[in-house]
Length: 84
Image (tube, rainbow, N blue to C red; front, top):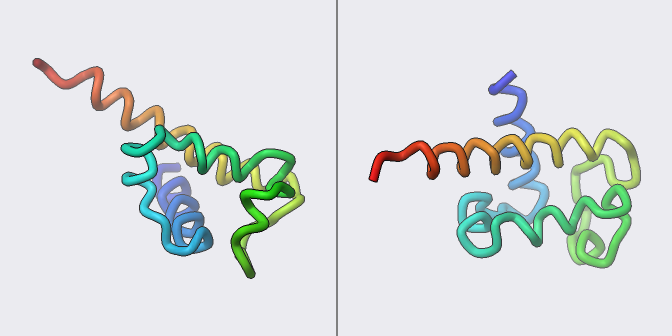
């Protein structure tokens, strides 16, 4: 399961002009990246990217959102579980 999530995250990073997912988390906790999934990717933010290799306008795009949500949960769990 984890390898599927990682491969989806890598594909998403590459499709969104090689964005750095970790940097996006640090800057806005994925707020912008999640905005790309609104209306199945049929929105102004996603339109800024040309030739995106993602299933825009299809239900399958939610798989990438799920992977991003799981990664966000993983990061936040790591932060809260670190001893002070």
